[in-house]
Length: 480
Image (tube, rainbow, N blue to C red; front, side, top):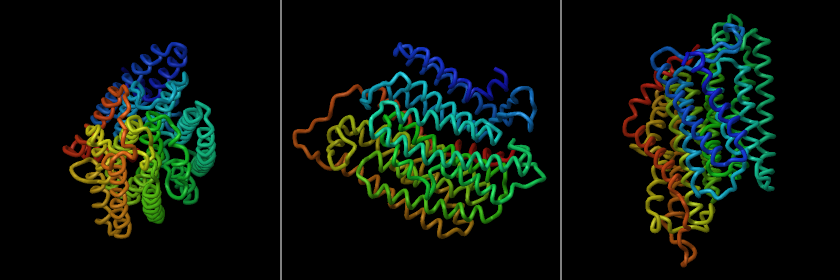
């Protein structure tokens, strides 16, 4: 496979799979087979991209024969490649989980085409080397996300879709305005051309651009769309949303402030640090308040986004490396928690912690499986979350950011409270009904998906050197 074709594979393969699954919409077995074949091909291409980027030769493609900076360009460097690979892993885990009975939601013929369209949007965002093209892939994600939220037509789904669309359209308009003003200011949109431009991007324009990315990332105070909508999704799709969508916004912040337009004015990084602290705190307080497992975990997406943004706010190469490490860790852990939550729902009959219990006595494997991503989210050793938080907090302390460090440590304690609330209520306390028995369900594919993700979490925790070394190299090559 040529380097140019490989560079566009994060978009080409999922889009081709989406088209194939549309054409097979009236033949469910064939549609599922094409879907699995497509995600496996996506994973293979992602692995090749990672190997090529790690060898110091990122895959590149210039469209239409127009060389950069005049044409649209894809460049898959180390950061983009590892995130494309994790995207493929999440796609495979979610599709495998769909084959179980863990989530009894009806299967719509457009579900798989929209899932692969979403993967194409995410992959394109990580592969592009052009600001306007980044906006385009954000729009692809938005269209597919709205479709996935709305299919089924329940009233709560339509309400969630409206909230999701309204606030994300606000971010979209900000992003489009920011991209237009960047072009008006510099005459460039290509990452490399912007990095080398003699005409700097004015501070108000940069602020507008970063604000748009923060809306997409679910940062404080514009995160209400996330917990208001995610809980209406089928479990496998919810895991994809939780793992990937906000991380694209974080990646865009990292790419702009950590590479393309760095160094930005110091005030930007200070403001981002306080936004990160507020995001951490707002998210964890929302999680502590709720009793629905999905809402608790949704608010923790917001909280953990704060930690990732804090890595960017530190404005150092080590902080950027911590951001890459934390992003990869969090994608896997957060998706797995939502999948395990769906298993809890299937066995116990509810997502409301006040209505369930006794799962550890009845199904101890579920309880042990939950503890792996839950304690990793908290940041306890030897799990991947410990290293992710250690890297961020070590750099924050080294930079003398004591207030941000104190907030991050306090939020870790409250995160432990939330995870233990789920453990005590769902697993440890007796079920409210004395005659309760776990429901019978075909959970083999669900076990396979969640165990695989838990194994990756353990691997990153017990042997962090591989991912840490790669994240450090990726941070060093963020600038085009």
